[in-house]
Figure 1 (cartoon, rainbow, N blue to C red):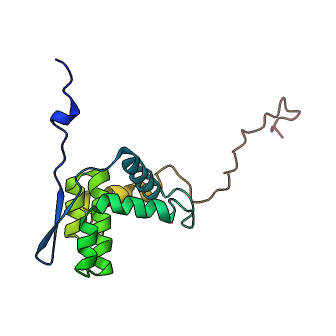
Figure 2: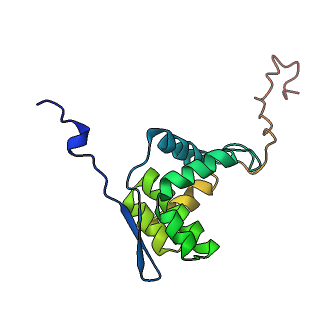
Figure 3: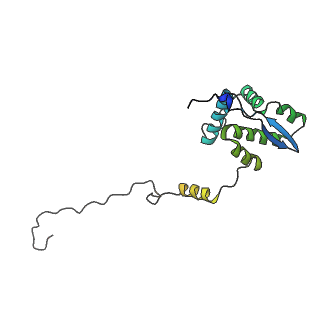
Length: 161
């Protein structure tokens, strides 16, 4: 079987978000350059790499990225005077959509950008990983070794001393 041309099946429809009764359509796909930039940003954020004051992208890159992710909907959002909180949630949702997929984007959107509560299983795994193992010691000082009993050799008296 031969590979099909991507143009035949990889056409992403617009990504639609409802805000105050209006449906805003955002581009369903972005350029490879923007996707790589988003991927780098999200990996750094998830791994906690670098200091928070490190510049990850400059203002011009951020503006370009925002224009591409929001498309024509950006003009509509500004014309409709959405709040900063709304714009932040849209931005977070779009980043999640393009880097992690629709299901994660829906979770973020429906949780209003807040991290959803962890399931009981996830909490238990995290707690188990943070506990010291059974064989670990509370102190970092090495324990003294027990010395084997000294061999005294032949004794000179009948009582062994």
